[in-house]
Image 1 (tube, rainbow, N blue to C red):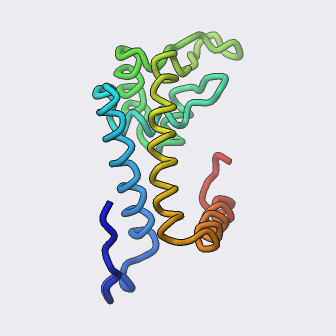
Image 2 (cartoon, rainbow, N blue to C red):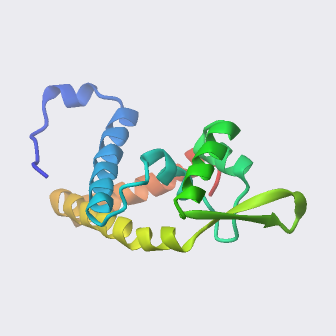
Length: 152
């Protein structure tokens, strides 16, 4: 990835947009790696939902809330993921009317590819910023989770 010098205009960008720009750059690199590994049937919207599935399964209503999409959208995405073999649904032992969405074996094969791509991006960013500034960035973003992440 080519490194561009900052311009005066960069100072005018809001922090939210700055965070989004870097998130999208990482997401693009992850999806490039997934495509190269043959996982061409997963979309960013589906991946964002997959990331929110808990170890013991998660209800669609909880996925919708965590992903900040409607229940209908979450159901649609889960249907697509299930057809592609990335998730499976099981009865919820706590409520016979509800079903839990679980990560399926196929999604487990995606995880190392995505994790490696994320690690590569993070290593590049760390090298660019230096260890001290990288650690400060991670610490600040981690601290902000207390204000911004109701699911932690």
